[in-house]
Length: 594
Ligand code: HEM
Image (cartoon, rainbow, N blue to C red; front, top):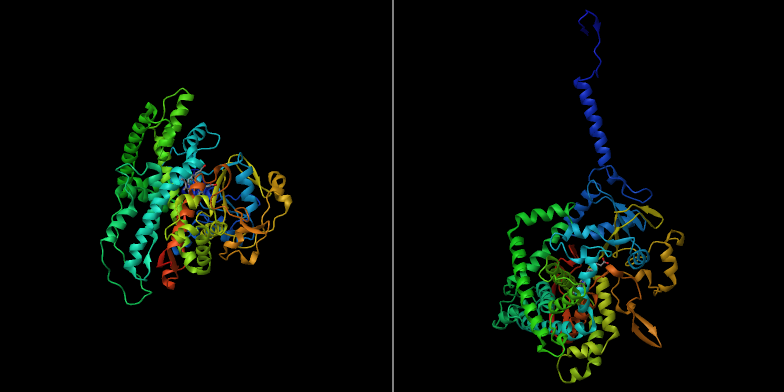
């Protein structure tokens, strides 16, 4: 009780203005409201994990726990579709942001990527993860952006049959021959013991795109595989473990710092791809990592030097040193300069060859090409070693196709590989790509409010299309036509797929890509669901080059070597999710194929 100035006794109110109690209550209420406001806000009607909704961090703790334990993440994402028994779900993967929508259905993914391209475009997710490294790359621009169109034109010539057959394939073939020579040396030194293969594979994939981009003739253009061959061919023998199953360590030549810079830059994404705050994580890395800073500087200087040399080559071609200027084009950079100069002339502007965007397109090619193709090849080594009957069949088929080369005891030439096709080889490669799950989460941003499988999704939502679960490796969810889009229904009769046995989807089986045509089994790349390269105008731009490389590499490898199973501890299909879905380890045990 208290007495006021007039001597009246009164009971003070607990919440009189300015009292500590009122202050405490209002603060608690405000904090509670802020807390409620920060909690994940589900999109109405789309299933989600109930626990995640009542936590500020949503699904993040569960995702982080899983990826710390297994190094994978994409399997966790699609497992939520299975757990919630829905082809469309939402997860709360970013704090205080919109939920991600996750779709696990091939037909819907295909419809969005091929037909609904105005409603869905390149996702913000990829800009957050890797945008800071090559901010002006067309990869992060929207289809409607004029700069997207201009920069795409720079790359236009690279996937043309002329460039693919006359330039790219020849460079790929030469570095693959270096690789075969390297493994000849390794086979001699390992004498039937297993050895680690991942470095060799990623290096050859990088060598391939490196020579394609910069050309093989520049004195600064070194390849990592040649350096390895030179090192190993000078070694007479190595100490070998007693057991034939035990692995042998091979010495490794240092990687030239220019190529290493691309590897270091690519590896920096491993941190960001799994971080709930990718842009901040990469920013911290850029400020603190001396390896990253050094790598960035080296690649900038190298690209600048190579562009300057390519400009000189362009000038000498234009000054009439050649009857057909384009006939002298030996590299992507030459072709890109050609394209930009013509384009600039047409548009009455200065060419933008020494621009940030030109540098970033070159880096895009180097990063997009080597990590993905290298990853498919590492999976190929494991899968083929575990499926000797496929290897035998493939080898027999190749020897029959290239019978002249076989009789003459030589490798098939690049012209032979390109001109004589093998349905079984194409099917084996397609099945390796499928089973590798190299890219299994394709992302798009909703550019406007959209309808997806009967749900309203607000503009700006990130939508992930998963290629590693139901519909691909287990039976698809049943979806009523009434939930499908108009574009799906009108394109439905064009989408004809073989009905693969749903129980057999997990199995590696190249035959699934061979379909009966006039009494013959022919390869059909649309025989079943596959989104490893994405689809539509935002699908992989380098797909043709990737197939060409896989075709040349697999042909020469199987022609020359048998891959044997490694002991269990060196095998297995555990993966790490980064820019790609790569095996955690890759060992091989090889013998010469007689
Ligand atoms: C096995 C090898 C490869 C795989 C699995 C792969 C996969 C992919 C995927 C999944 C995308 C995104 C597609 C989408 O969102 O729909 C993509 C985009 C892209 N890829 Fe590839 N890729 C491979 C090889 C290559 C090569 C060799 C190059 C270049 C020489 C390349 C250049 C690109 C480019 C430029 C884009 C961006 C396209 C755009 O934004 O519009 N890729 N790739």
